[in-house]
View 1 (cartoon, one colour):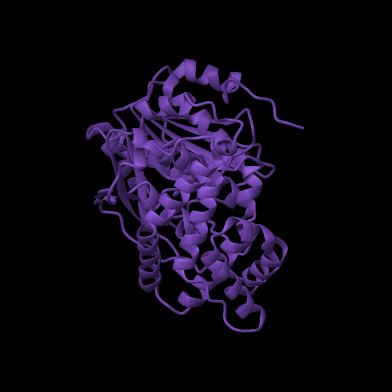
View 2 (cartoon, one colour):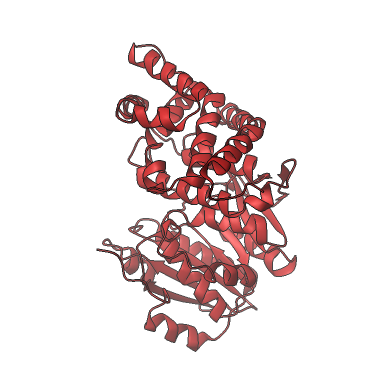
Length: 427
């Protein structure tokens, strides 16, 4: 049964709260879903930051919940914040997902005429009161429209970012943003208005596609952007071998879509533009260990290749399919899985180009990439298993440079797809 489409994500109770407080200078939005163990800490740290650094301003925290079945809302309600900080906890309306939660925050920010809007993940265990200052000050006082986080993460945390979103965003959109879907952002009221003006709330943007959607818009429509150094991100990270297929499909589908939406912009770019990193006094903390089930990812790759081999052969270039087949045959015969960045870049670009003219189910097209993601992630995990974070990061950067080197391959592939389709002009 399809979800009902609502004209607003805000419930009447929330609107009454907004009408009561009328305006704020800073609004902090916290999307939640079954985060009972961490939500109280995040709210408390945000409240302390707002009081410590902005006690002379009007500030508020909006906890936008997706219908948690644990004690998330109860713990959010009893979490203590200074009396100078307004707090509201509510279940949003609309499709369940992080994007709908953010939609409620966007709408609240516009209604409250907020000068700065911050969104923080609800599973953070490394957030400090200083994060609020680091993210809010540039928007309030320096004219920034959008800020991304820049922090150190475990080498096995954020594999969807590391394996596809970071290198593809950097290569295709020509912007070096290390955490394009980091989850902790700051932006102006102007950007909030742009976000809620788009009718996307019955798409993957309403779910996990929200972060890369916001990033894509900010790259092309924000007036002034930067990354903010926040030290270390410690949160409830998951083994990448767990079922991330839904998140992968929603994020990658949205990224592929946004590549098509902004084609006229990035086709004019010539070289990658580094996004400045605003220095702060944030400190790095020790990272929790993350276990990875490499063997499970390798089995997912082998099973997926057997199941989707005909699709891969139809979608991929002859060279990419030959490389993929070789990787499969070697692993199936007991040899180590070899999945080099060059092969991965070709595969991603082949799928991204195909997506632009695919007339059937696009989400299905992206979903058959999941076994390939497991294969590439497994190969990376084995390569860096005994290496320190710094060495793993060098490999991520090297992979991003490979994606940049294959830009012309993607442009050529995209041009041929569009011309062959007869539905769009490449120019």
